Image (tube, rainbow, N blue to C red; front, side, top):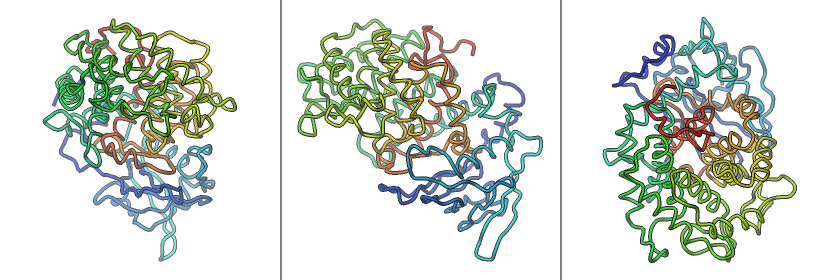
Length: 478
């Protein structure tokens, strides 16, 4: 396996990842109504559960021979105190973000794993009474994700995710979805973006295999003479974003025609009213889905940077519909122009702020959208059953439209990153407090690594969606 030149300390941290290790997968049970919230416990290799108002994390599962198992933590334990502190209550409200036990545990893991003696102190409640545990943690660099100078740990984490993605990529170039179907195309596009952002030339083959898969499984079915056939719009937009970022990063124009085809199909599927749907037809009695419009805008904006002119009629029609979906109370984008007040705002608002930033258009609107994301950043992982795209586009939107606030929001979400971080195999999926059915469709392990990887990558000005402006950067210095 290729290993880049990285600081010695980071290399020593990552050495365990290079062997054949068992990767822990949290045992997450979806809750559509929010009666419980399951989530990973980071390097502890365990699964926790919280209910509204609870202060103690219930341990639902402990990975065999993992960090928690070796430290004496058991399924059924409740975490009463973490590093001597009693957590505040958990709230199922989306606006509460990570407040309560999640923030306390994530911050403790982040801080203690960077200590000279990485040992986490826990007091747990169990059937036999109470127990004090001292759990030895895998070490990490002597700074934490929550500090502005955390770039060493962030880059090491991103590289670990990228290596894991390369290791688990199927021979045909895809990353596995959750329930089959065509979700692997969408998932593969985002996993490919992570490998691009990591900037390791050793991963170029994996990136090209990913492109080969989405081309064969999706793009090759497009017939521009008949926009009623071909892949779904959410696939097509993700493919366009992936191909455009690839060309901008590498200068390789091999897939130029495929990129143009994706963008032209999206333009043909915008109605005169500006609405878009999953496919050619417009759902919800013609109301459409703004989350499709905004991803199309991002594909068009990135393709323009590659030299493909934007279809101005499609752009303006779609933009008009996007503007009509803005919630005047929050400044964020709703489900559609008919439902502007929906609370899960991050994916729609973030993707549009990103698209406008890349295109250099509607700067005041882009800034307004990004500032609404900053104000409402606690909602970031709630995106209509797909917490993944809320995080991915939420962070890119802030980086494009309100870059001065990016580090502040990243610091607020450091516990999320730490609770996603695994000692072997990159990142675990950490979903929202309610329905994660869409992410289960995409594949929790694959999209979990993609989400965490792109959140980490948003701090770097490499991908154009993250504020990059330099072409041909892939394979050059950090």
